[in-house]
Length: 84
Image (cartoon, rainbow, N blue to C red; front, side):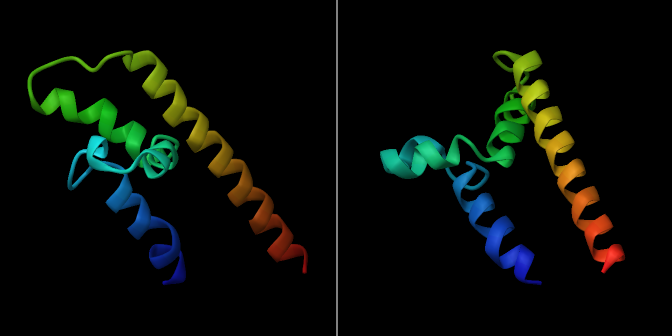
């Protein structure tokens, strides 16, 4: 429950799903550009407008990097929990 409130809700509001990130203040946009959901939006949104995304290989690579790091963090935390 807290995970959704703490991480996912701000990420949805800052990632550009509901409104363009260009409208955000500069320091907030700098943070929003590093969110994994922002990368996913950059990858998928052009496809809905019948265009190919700019630098799709980089975007997929960044998403794969986020997925890999998240997997290893989740694995480490799960192992730690089962050892205790």
